[in-house]
Image 1 (cartoon, rainbow, N blue to C red):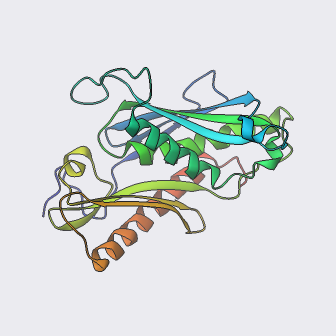
Image 2: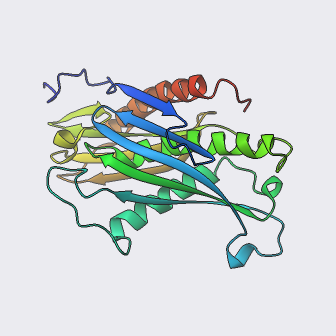
Length: 239
């Protein structure tokens, strides 16, 4: 089986991260998974959702959207988030909250915006991986401003897609593969190797326990590579 872009089954696309991509944001990056490009920004806001008022704890949340020509045909600009966008931004928020201690933030919200410039598969996993970098940079900014004493990060977190394409487990699907995959799976893991979320669907058929084990093995390999990239881009931050 030959992949559309010629990669090996366990090979990631080229990953590039540009820190501080947005000048006005407290933390930001441009993350690129091959032709998928997402701008992730972190904004620090005073106040928390009503259910946290008076608790002394902070909150981390996320929003996600695709620009109209981020794909082959124009996507209508969203005035209200679509069901897909809602599902993805909740996933991003859950993933990032899994590694943050909310108490040291005080009653502040850090809002992660993930804006897809170009989508070629894996936009949600790029959003989580890049969103973590933007979040860490924003927390570093808060520390420098004296808003927090130490970074309330418990670990790193990253995500990758895997799937069964033409009967073969593959890592980091692009759109050509994702749109025709028999099985599509998104895996979120923290640096210590524990899972945050596993989203797996038999799009074109069922999958066996052996195939699932193979997909998880590929995901662990990919996330290990992503964690190394995150650590390189955050080398000045102790986590």
